[in-house]
Length: 328
Image (cartoon, rainbow, N blue to C red; front, side, top):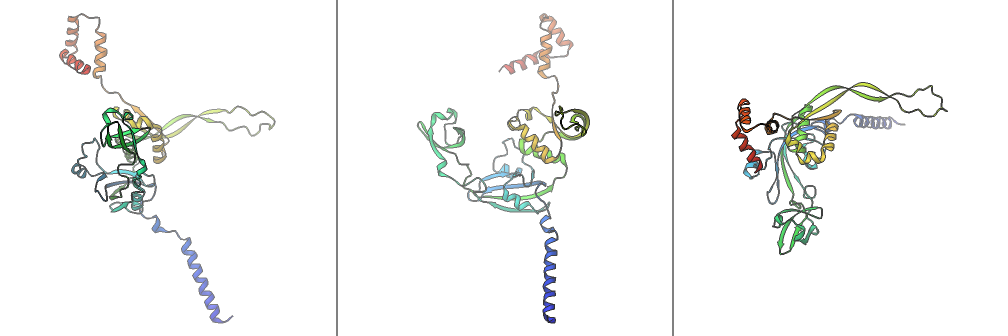
C-alpha cells in the first residue's frame, strides 16, 4: 500500500469518527425553549382569514371592539399544556421551542381548524323535530343527536346545516408567550379555568393517610398448600393532595357536573398530585336560617312573634318582602 493510499484511508477513518461523534452528541438546539408537557401562559387573537370573523381572543380590548365582552367570559392570558391538544396543533408547533416574550403569527388550514365544508352535512328535516322557540334562521338546534344550525325554514320544513359554523375557513392566530408556568397551584388553577371557565380557590398540601396495603406472602409456605386469602395491614403513607373549594357556581357548572371524574384525573396526571379533594362550603344563615327561626316560632301568638323579632333585632317587614319576592 502506498503512502498516498494510507493517508487517504486515515482521512476516511477520521471522517467516520467525526460523524459518529456528531450523531452521539445530544442535539441541544432541539431541546431549547418550551417543550411538550410544559405549562405556558399565552395571549392570542384568532380571526378567519377571508371573512375576518373573530374566532377567539384573550384580549379584553378586542372583545369589546367585537361586542363579545358581555358574554360572562373573562378575557385574560390563558394557561395551556403543550402537547395536550389545548389549542390547535399548528399553534402548539409554533410555540414549541420558543421562550417567554416571543410572539408570532400562524395560519391554521380549514382542515386542521374546524374541518372542510361538507355539503352532504346539510339536511332538510321536519320542523316538528325542532323546538317551537328555535324555528328561525341561525338558531342552534339539535336534531337526532346532531348539533347544527338552521339555514332556512319554510312552512313545515327546515334546512339544517350540521357543519361547524366556521367549517371551510382558514384561521390566523396571532400569539404571544407571556411566561412559562412553574408554580403547581397556578398550573392547576389555569387548567380548571380552561375546563370550567372559572378559577376556583385551591391549594396543595401533603397529608398523612392511613391506607390498607397487602402483606407480602410467606416465602416458607408449602407449595402444596392452598393459596391463602390475601392479608392487609394498615400503613401510614404520605399523599400529596390538591384541595379545591367548590363554590355554588362551580357545583352547578355543567362541565363539572358531567365530567368531574375525568377532569379530576387529568389534574392528577398533569399536576402530579396523588388525589383531589373537593370541599363544599356553606356560608352564613341567609333565609334558610331565618326559615328555621320562623318555624320555631310557629306556636307563638302574633304579639309574641313581634316581640321575639324585636328581641332578635329583625325587621319583620323586610322578611315579608323577601318571602313575597321568593314566591314571585
